[in-house]
Image 1 (cartoon, helix red, strand yellow):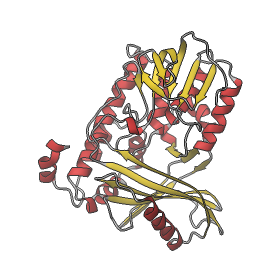
Image 2 (cartoon, one colour):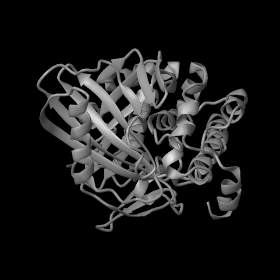
Image 3 (cartoon, rainbow, N blue to C red):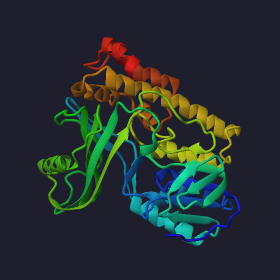
Image 4 (spheres, rainbow, N blue to C red):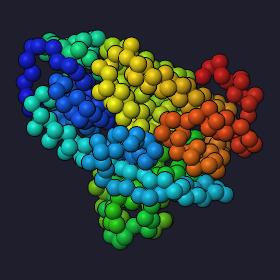
Length: 386
């Protein structure tokens, strides 16, 4: 699918990979720099994938609220978490968007803006600082090249994984819950830290995911689908049909990487522009998009450099927490660390998800009574192998 043929001249931005990162960057550029010429390249025929992306109100800077608002398919005033011995409602606004909504908005933008071009079914063979060579040998040249082709290009050796399968369910009766459940860890702790994630998308529709923070990437999707259906029925969901299935295996970094901003800019998951502890991609993807739209992607630019420095600080801390979770706890006791986290003040939780913790927040997260199951000798023994 090609909406517009580009000339052989250099464009302002060449974006590789039509996922969340480059969708947000395209929107930011069209709003903040409407004259910028942009070519978005996607290897598959269907851009923007098959995903549900969620974010907290604190993830969105005030200056970007108008840009993000059209993407929202559902918003809730609070969310719940459930652990053995702890049930808590967090009074923070939570929102969801989907690939379908992103695709509809972006395709309309590409149809109507003469300086935006989307090419699908074209694979990048080589991505360089100012040019992308395609499989057919043609070259697309740009002043700034952003490579955001997803988790499969992550450059670190993965020893920890976030795995999930989600079923988008049509319900015969109204959903038994009206607020999202971000973590229900009151389930058997198999294959690492395990929890269910529930989004009541409408009165008769819910997305339910079975998620694992595991030491290995193996995922039996059929078996997990059965687990989801059993969980749903046991909690009062009457399933009429399965509308859609999504799944993923995301490598989780145990040390800092990426986020450097060199040309070409490696963005999205492979570039380290995501939250390494939660797997959430929206907050950092949005901030990177805003920084790039405001700066030409030049690491010497003051605003872009400040964004990179702050992101590296946040990433190092979250990756350290990953090392603790995966090396200082036995798999079946990891839930204790998350349960302790959700006893913290709401502001600390909000800023952690937003990838915007303060020094005081980081001290608050680390200090206090250690979670049950934490073994510092085990952590010190394994840290050389992390």
